[in-house]
Image (cartoon, rainbow, N blue to C red; front, top):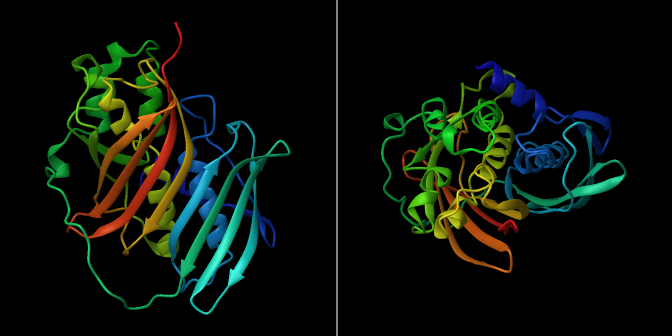
Length: 295
C-alpha cells in the first residue's frame, strides 16, 4: 500500500467523540477549500459507523452548503432517522467554526434478491494502456497560469491511480466545444487488505473519487479547461449516488460521465461507474457551479 493511500485511509478513519458525533481532519487542498469528495466520504463513514455491518449503503443525497476550511477539523453529527426491518436511514451534518458546511442523507439496506437488469458498459480502452497522472500532467503544465498547479494536482491524486480516456478538459480547451462526455479509469494506489478491507470503505473511497472529474463533461461542451487554466470558477452544489452492486475500489473501475444540460451558472453532470468485467456498480448525479470569470 502506498504512503498516499495510507494517508487517505487515515483521513477516512474518523475519531468518535460521542455516540453519534465524529471528528475528521482535512488535508491540504489544491484550491483553498476542503475537497468536496473528502467531506462527502467522511460523512458517509460517520453514517455507516452507526449502521449494522450487514446493511450496505445503497444511496446518498447531499448538499454542499459552505466552503470548508482545510486548516480546521470537521465535526460530523449523525441523526439516526430510522431503523426499519429492511432499511436504515441516517442524516449527517458536517460543521466547522460553528456553521454547517455539508448535509448528507444516506440509506442502507439489508441484502436481498430482486429483479436484475442494467445498461451495458460503454466501450473503453484497457486502463493499463493509458498514461498515469505522473505521465499526463507534465504535458500540460505550460497551460496553467500557476506553475505549481500540476504538482498540487499530482499530490492531491497520489492516493488514486486515475487515468483519462482521451485528453482532460484542460488539455482540449483550445480545440473548442466537444461532445459533453468524458471517461476515466480509477482504482486506489495499492491494495486494501486486512482489518481495513470492509465494504463500507470501498463505497466511501468511490464517493471520494466521484467528485474529482464529474464536471469535466460540462467543461468539454463549452471548450473550457476549468479552474486549472483559470477560464471557469466552479464548485460542487449537490451530489447524489446510488450503489447498485458490490465492487472493490482497489480494482479498476470505469467512470463514464456526461452532461445533459448547463444553464444559469450551473452545470449538470451524471456518471456511471462500471467494474472492469462490465457490471454497473454506481450511478452518480451532480450539479455544480460553473461560472465564467468576469474580465
